[in-house]
Length: 425
Picture 1 (tube, rainbow, N blue to C red):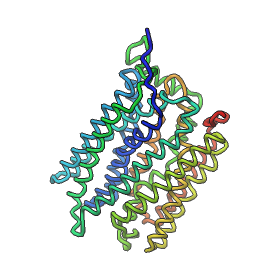
Picture 2: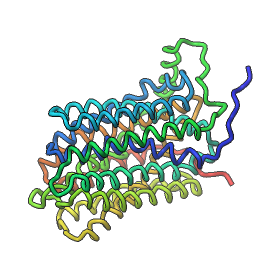
Picture 3: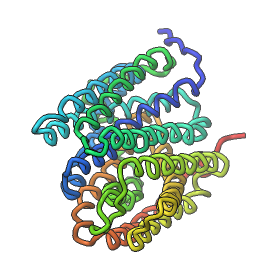
Picture 4: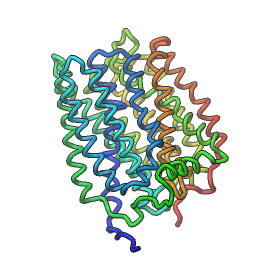
């Protein structure tokens, strides 16, 4: 049986747009939903709890990841799901003006999250199939960059746009409806572009198995969960981001809350510029530098530098909560420092997942890793709002700093293949 042809295509033609699109639903669930509900008067406890539940599809996506590997091409999955996510964004826009907007938008966010999680499986699998191993680590910085650019567009541009559209009379319902309508159009355009741009890779076909689909599903899972180092791997995946998971849920409410409540009393436009633009640029630079250094030095040599970069800058939020500065330059500088360190440190997490997933079922095993990554964001995030309301912002950020301890322990226990991630000369 002859192999399907491979369409020659530079990775630069599709990696930037693929990972830009992959980032937008994450931004919608993790940031836009938080900002929107805060603008519409939902409490911090409810925001943190319910939006954290939206991570569940990313947690459980390994349950259906083998079917993505066993049924259809990754390219076909990617294009179809981009159309579905676009339709979901349009539904958010239509349901916002209703009296039951909170329940309705949460339901549609679930649809978007489920579709996006499945899209991530296919997109990451396609990335692993379409690139040589030596290029996979080198392009980590590129894919991270355009994922971060989508965050600039979302956390920066769209949050700013919502504040601008709302105006002085704070018409946030109509403003956010326009924002999600814009996102819907973006996804439809991206899907049509990828019909043309994504290459047809010879290896991108259903995994061959003589067993039934359920037997093949179980075989993929069994291969992962029979690892001898499973406890150490899961400990790293669940604990590396435990501090950032809590910080992520309360950072925007902290910036929006009145100074009497311990916040910084910023508006949407200021958040869009400081956090969503300068912060994400710093995050991007950190990711690019991290990917380049890992490709030169290997993950093992860079790990502890990245661990320090991940956690030490969280101290800037303690300072912001204690001082409550009014200077936008000082606030923006603190955000840049923290985001630069986070972008640099998170590279270690991504490359480690590639090492764990490397093998005959790399698409499904990478999806399993990202599922545990999402669980490590979801569980701490669910209780973050309650913890903050009990402690206040300053003590909450001290708590976040202390949460680096379990992450450090998890990093000390992992074993990294010699020079993994280092690009061959």
